Each structure stands twice: as C-alpha cells, then as structure tokens.
Image (cartoon, rainbow, N blue to C red):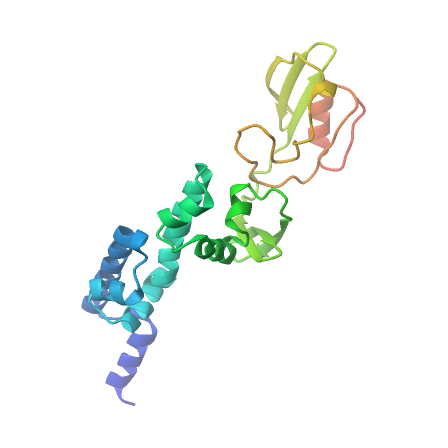
Length: 251
C-alpha cells in the first residue's frame, strides 16, 4: 500500500490529521472570510466576492468554511441578516424599513428569510406569534432533553431543557385581606398589597406565558396548573409542594 497516498487521503478526510501549517492556513482563510462577511453583510456580498477577499476560490471557501464553522458562508450571512432584522422589528421598525435596512431588495426577501429560519412571516414574528399555532414537545436527544417548537411551516425553535431545575411557583391572592403572596418550591418568597379584586382583572388578553403588559415572555414549559377557589395558607402551600405533581390538598 502506498503510505503517502494513504496519508493524503486520511488528511483530506480528517482535518485534525492535517499538518499544522495547512491547518493554520485554512484557519486564516476562514478568519478572513468571517471578517469580510461581518464587515460587509449589509451589502449582501456574493460568495465569489467573499472568496476573493479570503484569497481562495468560491468552491474551496464553501468546503473550508463548512468544515471549520459547521455552516456555509451563505448561511452565516443569512444568520447575521436575520439577527439584525429581529432587532429592528423588536424596536418597532416596519417590515419595509427592516428589509431595506438589512440590505435586502424588498419585503419579499425578508419574508423568505423568516419563513426559512423562523417558520413564520416577519409580521407574525413581530407580533410575537399572536394568532399563530405553535406546537411544542419535549424529546430526548444526544445532549439531553430538547424542547422542539414547530408551526405549520416547519421548525420554529429548539432549546435544551435544564434537568433538575424545575420550579414550582404559586401566587396566593387574598381578597379578604388585600394581600398578594408569592411562593417558590413551597416556601414564602414575597408579598405585597393587592388593592383590587380578581373579578376586576380584564383577562381577555391574558394567557399563560404572555400578557398585555410589556414584560418578557415566559421561557420554559408549564407541566401543571392548579387554580383554587380560596386563598391557601402557607402550610397548605408547603404540603402541596411536598406531595408533588397531580396531588391536591384541601384549602
């Protein structure tokens, strides 16, 4: 067997076996490409322009970039564009202004970008998914338990759940004594005056994980929800937590 031929084939297949000088040169090519994309992403440069700035052919850059970064130069450019578009939409920019600000030719290109990577339109994303059905589920993966979210258009989100960090939260509204009390994992955390009544709350725009107030959206999952008809005592809350899920206690 030709050892030089075998070594060459192995080097091409496994980059960690490549000579240090070759690896350093490849790294420098990818570094120059990343720097060019980050500095010129608003002009939406073509792959040939990026490759020229990196000093290699477009084909070589495509393979080197994907091998070192795990995605193509085009995908990296799209990621920067999408991230900036999200920030603009979050700051109340219009869809038209956002499209032009991130270097796209119009709203149609922005629509395609969001549908491809977010599985929703820019308008749906700007509205926080209001009116959009998002299906989610927990599934095991090589990195632990994954939270997968989808829309009818495809994958909308992926996150890893933190095992062992589940939390029980309880809010007790005592109308009789005008007190609002918060418990975490069965233990008292805080209380404040509650000058009102539950019947006065306009709950048309309230639902789990989101409200009409400008607070951050809830990130996580709700495994169980209980609503009691009367205010529970501290002892009852502690007992409820100690018994675990699917167990109820008398008020």
